[in-house]
Image (cartoon, rainbow, N blue to C red):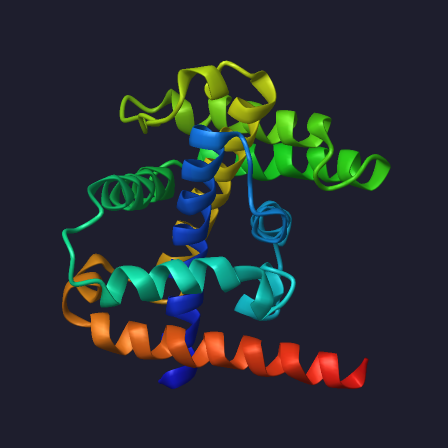
Length: 217
């Protein structure tokens, strides 16, 4: 049961991480490089052996776990923008689950983009541009769309807009995983304490592993 809860928590943290990065890019044009790389990496993990594999290790979702814990323990007003993005990604995941053809199209396009990754690099502008194009030509064709709030000056830069769209694709991917491992909206209402405890334990594990690596050095 704990393992399953941890999987749900990691997938939820993956969604929150993508949202946080979208907000960061859309307002400043900057991004947490480690979290950004892990979120983009997740898009190409089609047959992971574990949830950790999706993000190249538990540390890949560290930012998402930190943001998730902050959200669940905050006694201040609800972050409406984050909540809106979260529910929007979950809604898009639900719509995608009813469109096998779209899922197949995305899978095929990701296979093609994987070849670019091997030729260039994971975060090469051409790769991110292709991921953004996948989002525009598939998920963005739904009548329901996510409206991004940010700096128009920043979003008018094509590279920044591509990053936002690629991260939205990663967010939907995380939402799909969240559903697959048993995540549900009702948990967000009635299992907040359990999810927070799981996130804290996972974050402590990351910090413990980080300290162990420093000792080895």
